[in-house]
Image (cartoon, rainbow, N blue to C red; front, side, top):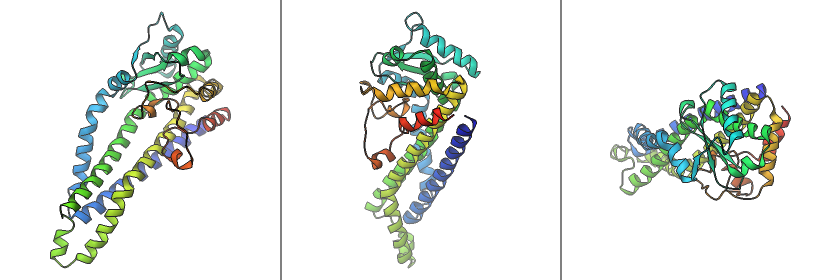
Length: 296
């Protein structure tokens, strides 16, 4: 468990460090091609401004979009009691428990920090899991909260959004004839042409590359939540068995959509594809997660 947690933390840090270098490099190339040093900080400011609202209200937006309702303790005593017990064991505030009336087994966590956390499960999951399996799922979601994964992925979303903005501005500036005007006047058109070609290639490839890095980071955080959840319950088999049941169930979650799919413990859309599609998947393969848990 300790090896899994440590390894996933360092891999996440490496991916973030690489992402920051990638982001800075793209900003530099676009700034040189457009002869505009303000492009990079402006993109950061705009992306952060667009993200602030979703950061503070994302939990309410997500819960409304999946038609979740507060979990009544008299109706779902095992669920509410498990959330309270695991929060006590983890030394963190008790998240608010919500349920989705849907037969597909799934769960997710949201909220910007442990003091504003929500753990939501479908009625299908609550009816399918035994106590150790349910505790494994809750511990996984509680680990997302304790590890500040929502905040962590929000930082990544800001960087992805800023890269997309810079790429869009590059295209629009090119259409308006803003490429390298000063270099052209000073006789540096050949160098500016090189910067323009590099910038053009990055404007096409950078948003796609950013999404690939974002998906890779998300997969790392899922592995980390699995390991941290197993540490919390001291019983990796519980989560492994739960994931096995989820894997065998083929029913998609009706209220899920692509905007919220990354939050769930398993992809609720049940989309399957080849190796190329898997590169953009925010979840690791369930069979791989199960194998890692059983190797702990």
